Amino acid sequence: MGGYLALMLPLAVAAAIATQGWLRYLASLSIVLISLALYVSGSRGAALGAAVWFLIAWLARLSRTERRHRWRWFVAGAVSMMLVGLALATNPRIRAWFDPARAAMTDGPALDRWFMLRLGGHILQDRPLLGVGPGVMSRVSNLYRPIETGAGLDHIQQLHNTPLQLAGELGLPGLALYLTGLCLIGRLWWRLWQCPLAAADRAMLGGLGGGLLAYGISSLTDYQLENIPIATTLLLMVVLLIALADAYGLPKRLISESGRRSASLALWVWLGLLVYIWLPFTLTIGFGAWADRAFYSQHLNQADTHWQRATRLSPWDPTAPAVASEALHGLDQVLGDSEAKDNVRSLLLDYAHQTHQAAPNDAWFNQNLAVLHQGDDLAQALTYAARAVQLMPRNRNYGYWLLGELLWAEGQKQGAIAAFTLEALVNPAALTSPLWQKPPLQVLYSAVVDQTLAEYDQLLAQMEETAFGYNTVYETRILLGWWTGHPLPTVQPERLRPMVQALLMADTNPPDRPQPARNRPGHRVSHT
Image (cartoon, rainbow, N blue to C red):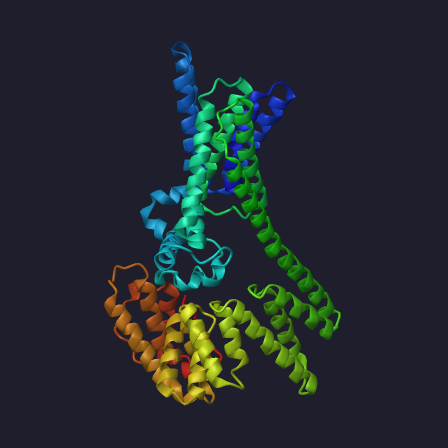
């Protein structure tokens, strides 16, 4: 949203300058509305792009103004820049930049973009020439995200940086092609600016250049080329630049007949590839919609036929088999033991495997297969469960718990203890589950608790006591020790929240001592 507003604001200003009468009033109103929307959007990248455009436009105007009128433009521009600065200063997200005490805790978007920048760097280190391919970032991003992201940046679709996104998807050649295009557009704009243009055309040229500049800066914090309004506007702006160049007779570099023939052939090949990709995918979407309609109309055979066609037309797209497996899983849950249930189960597994084949690095697809095979094929289930936690090592969806159950079912006791310990480190509430009081996990509980507390003690020993997050880890260790009935170390009350302090004090008061935690399996203690 912010990038589109930054793109349109210079064009609105150019329209207000170039037009007369009611059109000028309409353009002026659009300037006010776009500016307000830009402020409300809170987009810092768009605000920075608009501010840079305004500063450059002001300096360019000062340089072209007669000396005796220059002071007026200087005062007007200075006042306007003060208003822009005031607007930026009142933006809470921008103010957070200048508050070091809060920046690390509150500026999540900026931190995410830093992690995405590193993620893109990892992609270029691994695949510098080809990238990961267009449109598949969400399926492979977990392979490259920094470990510091924790449970964040899960299957992200874009890197929130246009040059970085293109480099990650298309490799360095794609980035070079993008930068070459920008240079050619900038060169054409500069050549036009040097021409003796009519006032209206110069205003339009300034608006085009300003819009491209503002959006170019904004695009360093976002990727929106898949947005149809933005892509269409950018294309029309380039077409207008070319039309201006033709209107003012800029010298052209003529292409030879053989060159035109080669360019025409390349264009037809490109269009053929687009049709080859677009037509099957369009049919895939249609078959998917027909399958959904048939399934919820209780026509299972017809739905299966449409899902199969959609999957065969676009085997690289996991959408159709994923939707099919989700729908069939719901049906499988309500069917009793029967031949129909066996058939549905067979279809469910088939579609789940097709989904995984289309996106083998999707953590959720791996975890789904681990759950589906948990009861009939432990070896396969273990493979998929291990891959799921590799792709999402700090997700709180009980991936390590599932892995621990599978390892324990295979008789791998130490592996199961390690998996459950990792689950407790990622999700401390896992130690409060009532499942620990029942077979088959009951015999593992003491070992998992001992290992978990030892890991927390080691983590605290490695952390600086002044480090951000130390108190949270310390409090979690104290609460887990209290819950499991282990002797507590010397407690530092100043590191605990008042609620936790009150809890510990109440538990040390003999007359009011609550029932031991291990006898209250349904109770929960928050670790946040």
